[in-house]
Amino acid sequence: MTPLTIARASVWIKTKADIQAALDPSDEDRIQVFPSASQRLVLEAIESLGFRMRQTETVYSPKLKGSLPFVQELEFVPIGGRYRGRLEELEIVFLNACPEEIELLLQIDRKASGILGRFAESSDIDESFVRVTLGANDLSDDIACVAETLDSILIKYT
Image 1 (spheres, one colour):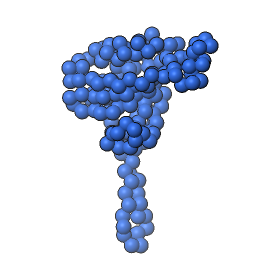
Image 2 (cartoon, helix red, strand yellow):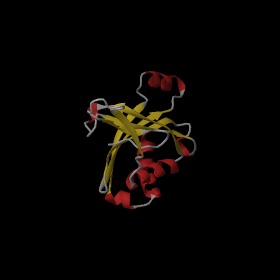
Image 3 (cartoon, one colour):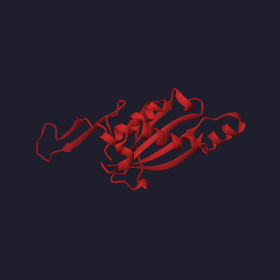
Image 4 (cartoon, one colour):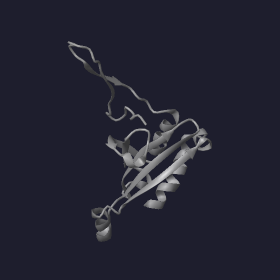
């Protein structure tokens, strides 16, 4: 999927013209990529659960076998709600977004507490990866319904 231009992320199209004696044979044209309606619904649901977007990062990820060899990770931190103090961060990758369904990869990073929590954090076993598919029925509902679905998943990993 093409990365979204949110949280200071930029996207551009790079062109190169094979013209002899051209002054500037290559060019980068910045474009705006807005979230689709289903992506926007998920982002608003995450925010309603008390998360704020910290940053985005586009990373090489051929193992996910998407249409492109990279993905955009959207990193959220809990600033309120039931996950503040329980989760360190939540990363979301939109794997697929079409009108019929949206597929997400959630990386849920629990907050370390106590000696076992610190050991888990240093060993990277405090993170869980969960694939979630929201179908047309889920996406036709409001933000509260999507938030409830995501909340029921997140609570299992706190």
